[in-house]
Image (cartoon, rainbow, N blue to C red):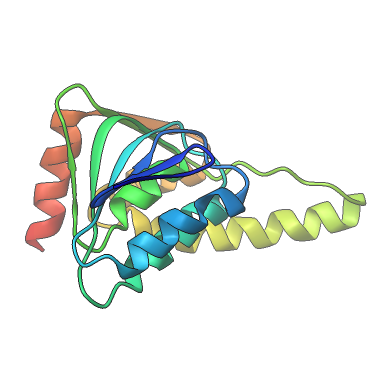
Amino acid sequence: MIEFDDEIIVVDSSVYLLERMEESEKYELACENLRNSPDIEIIINSPGGAVSIAMMLVAAMNANQNHKPRALITGQCHSSASLVALLAPGGCWATTGSYMCCHQVYLELNGSPQSINVETAFYKKWSKKLMNTAYKGFLTPVEIQSLLDGAEIWLDHDDINKRLTKRDKR
């Protein structure tokens, strides 16, 4: 069965994450399937997008009482899409030719200078917790700190799978 929720595609036991994650209402069907399907995986070929949507997808996967959904990276897995992949409760694997970009959370801030300062301080603390959770065992503590300091880390499928194998043995 193929279902469409705007550009989000659900085919039988797979949810396809193929676009930039924007507009959370587009992901309602995907989340419903990730929460309730007894055998489902998420296929990722995405440039990333809103962290709040990535966390919504992760929460849906973690809420599945019948199955631990896994992530399969089939192309690009950048930014917040890497969080979805690495936090999938059933594990993750990268196919030949796929790649990942990890970096600090990007912010879009509005408001007075004081509110922007407060929000920036909050996001620094919040993103540090998130990145230490998501990338723990996949990236080294030094690499995680470099992300928090503004660096980007690019990995090809071999690097991704070596790191996943090492992380999952722990």
